[in-house]
Length: 150
Ligand SMILES: [Zn+2]
Picture 1 (tube, rainbow, N blue to C red):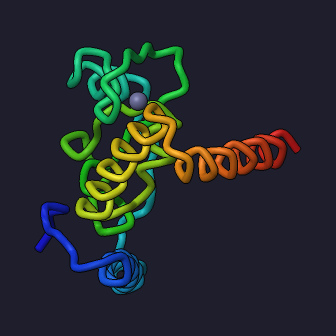
Picture 2 (cartoon, protein in one colour):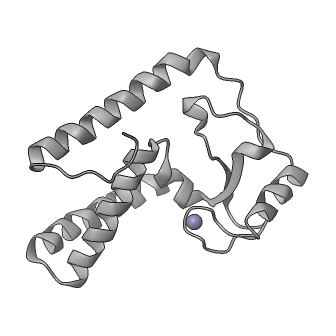
């Protein structure tokens, strides 16, 4: 199953599933690690072609990107999973979107989106536990930002 369209009996079963997905991804990264082609940076001309594929939008969030913005040529089929360094495997993505997408498997990323959308709604509804976690998240973001600026 490669779709986050399944239900679980409880939190424990869901947690085990998330842990299994991570383990599976790590194993597959290790398996192909030494056979990957070397990383390359697309030339300026290629970057223009990549950006034109989406009409100048980030393929992850849909927001606008200009050639001057901080954006990356994202591997649609993840480089870490054996995705090729070729024009047909690139789409433009904001640096922040691409960094958070990381090399999660499609199912993991679907879960991340489902969880994120649900959690966002809980914040809007001012759910007590969601607000507690949000406070924790905000502190984490401050620490992360401070580390980044060092
Ligand atoms: Zn984006």
